Amino acid sequence: MVRLVGDSIDKEAVEKAVTRIMVGQEAEEIRSRAREFGKMAVKAVEVGGSSYLDLNASIEELKSLSG
Image 1 (cartoon, rainbow, N blue to C red):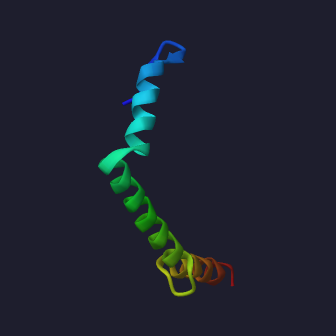
Image 2 (tube, rainbow, N blue to C red):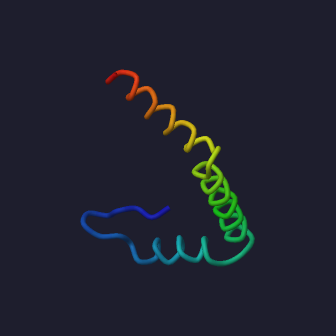
């Protein structure tokens, strides 16, 4: 974990954090999870996706309140 010390960040802590997410098995797991989250986000905003449907429902609700 990178911790703020006063007004600066410890160089070694930054180096360790960057190495952790760039190298090794844990880094691959992090990248894999990020890819999965990316796929989920794309699906959510596609026509028929959860975010798309929720936004349309909100729009319809607002339209019903104004007319």
